[in-house]
Length: 54
Image (cartoon, rainbow, N blue to C red; front, top):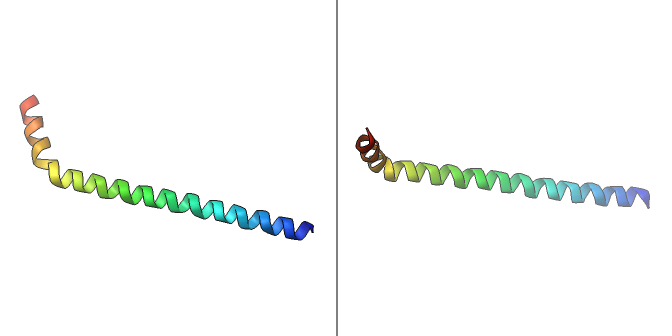
């Protein structure tokens, strides 16, 4: 019975770890894609904005 509960706890821990790792990976991918598209789309606007402030 102890082995079974330990195995269940281990599998639960592994599931939680994989979910957290997947969420972190997904978040970093989304953040990288968003920052890339933002930089790509608004680089000219940011440059114009910067020259206005200078």
